[in-house]
Image (cartoon, rainbow, N blue to C red; front, side, top):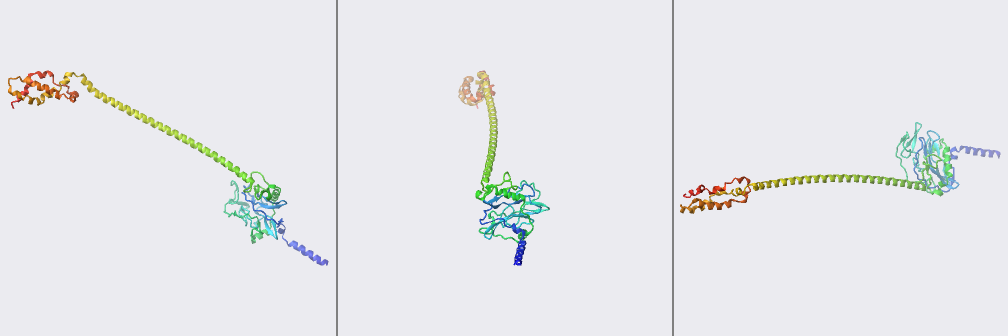
Length: 404
């Protein structure tokens, strides 16, 4: 009988020793209620080169599920990567599988935690020459002061936020051979900073799912345990994020309003300057036009005065010449014209008549015909024969031609 008991006890000890050490840490908590969907948030800036991102997750406490914010963590050793924990369905219960540090990334339930953890492996960076290189496509490194970076496109799934594997509505992913090997290889448990970070989250009432309804005000932090300050990021749609967005929107509106006012003031100043320049140009043009018109009017007035002076000069000349000299001008053409000769023909029958007396009347009658106004206006014809020559008898010579 004792021998049988000893054999049974020995078999039990051997069975316990045959269980891998990792299996003891495989399941931390088992419950029947599925965890909420993953929280959507923006990754904060990495505080220092060498830190590795560990995504946020739902943990379970005395008051139910609470959110453990994602954070940047300094790894326990060079060359190790973080395998996130996950909730898995097992024998009618949801059990939590703890995360761990190791040289390779193992299986984490196919959960899409984001920022390099898309469900399989890690695409956020890798170790090279004892330096961690960051993929800036999925990591927020701030101002780019890091020396080891690269950029590689990663397929980001923004439709599936299921936080558990198996069970009703859970993910159906299964571990690969490499992931199984990574789970059984030597690995390190979470660091003291990570454990303190989770403990602080469990004591924060606002992080309870029953309070924040899946939108915690602290969704991610720059460093473990820092739940306040500029490194804290709220979940999308949370009240804190809404307030922050409102403040940013108000600041943006104020900046845009100020910029619009400055642009409007600059536009008004430009328009005013342009109007002043146009007004000055218009005045200058009008002044030039007025000066030109004044010059033209002055020139026209000068020409008019000169023309009037030229017209008045002959009149003054005629006014200064004796009247009998002006009236005697037509006497010369009267002596040359043949019109009086035809009128003197009847004188032939009276040879005894005095020729001078008979010829005098025709000369007197022809003088007024030649005294036209236009001939009097010519100043050069003023030298007409004197009137006393008409009384000389010798000028009756034209009567001698009548015997023809």
